[in-house]
Amino acid sequence: MADPLRAPLDIEFDYTRSLGPVLSEFMTGLAGRRILAARGADGRVHAPPFEYDPVSSEPPGELTEAGPQGTVVSWSWMPEPLEGQPLARPFAWALIRLDGADTAMLHAVDAGSAAAMRTGLRVRPRWAASRVGSIRDIACFEPCDAPMSAAPEPGAEAGAVTGIITPVRLHYMHTASPGESFYLRGLAEHRLLGQRCGVCGQVYVPPRGTCPADGVPTHEEVELPETGTVTTFCIVNVGYPGQRVTPPYVAAAVLLDGADIAFQHLILGCEPGEVRMGLRVRAVWDDSGSISHFAPAGEPDAAYESYARCL
Ligand SMILES: [Zn+2]
Image (cartoon, rainbow, N blue to C red; front, side, top):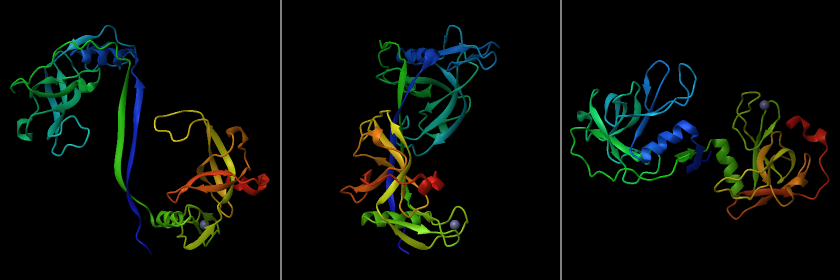
């Protein structure tokens, strides 16, 4: 059997969220170099502030200022920082209880070495030179006995911060399963390859390597035609950054002729309103040796009974 295929995969998107009244005020405070806190019904001061009191479930009253200095209550050393973390050199993740607060906040501490970190260490924020209303307006915390770094100007006059954009990125090496590798090698030759279960006779495409119904390995290889039937579909109306097809467009479950399980693909080449259950479609290949999308094949619709078992 050929070796499994491997390729690096990057999954990334910007997570955009509105902050709500409490966190908006907290983030706006950070832009002005103030760390805000909320007093709960039991008298405890929470920094960062809660959105709803853990005791009374009520939103907080007027926020107060905490810190900016604080005390490390727990920490963990990060010997090899990852891309995107607060510091590029080794640092500590720490729970820091700000002066005047009863709860701790998580942030990075630039202590220089693990030997310099300890529970009880007094720390102060090191403000970012440019502040926009983000937790990263605090570049990190640093020991209070460290020389003061060049202090950025206070009081950035950012307007009220009502939302944040958090980039999310996952980079990893994907190793395809033997069945998936078989399928992908077939795609590169414009062939659609599946596997048939020797017990129940079901044909799976892409092949799973095993039959989920019988739990046995699937060995028999089956080449399928590039025509199939839309079993179900949805019309995508929601846009997002990086979208390759302009909404509205159709994502559908396509049951290839001879297969017993449908797979997801785009249906293009017709108006979204023309797509229907039973629509006969044909694969359209792109230059990279993959299926770009499926398009109407111009055949009469498939009878419901011919695909009902796969709904
Ligand atoms: Zn089976």
